[in-house]
Length: 240
Image (cartoon, rainbow, N blue to C red; front, side, top):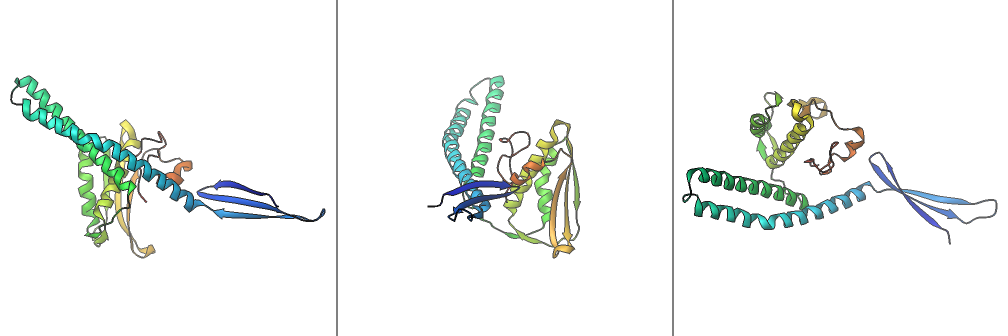
């Protein structure tokens, strides 16, 4: 029986499986059959499934203690806030508010994990993309003071059908990523919209910062969660 060998190859963003079998022949004539199978989609599906399982388990483990923590902080606040001295009251007020805010933040993170672990349900509606951009960036402009936000939003854009929650998530993630890339020194972040008449009047939304950029070797992985040039576990990620 002919022996069959199999190898995995990665060329750029393509993953292939190479299988080869030597054919029986005479002493002077023989041959082999080599087959290349593109396994890129299969490997991506396996990777997404693995991330989904990790996200599901993390969301479950993190979510369980959040409600008791929040309820306990609220109970302490109601029971003692009006019964202690003014200085202690301010400390208790600030501490319990901080606990409540951080719990809400963790709940948002858990929901994000749950969204990744489950199929996303899109709810598109007709909207003005420029208005949505201004609404999303308003808080970032006030908070990220070391970053100069530049806007080049085309006038008279048509309304589009899209999921505002999905656009909001993507823009928030990209702005946070840009802030992390720019670091303490700050920099510029430009948001622009335009109509690309060369591509069937496609509406284009672009974000560009003047940070260090992404190394070429990581470009194929930018849609993976938590991929970053600095630390593979400290990146918000985007969605494809």
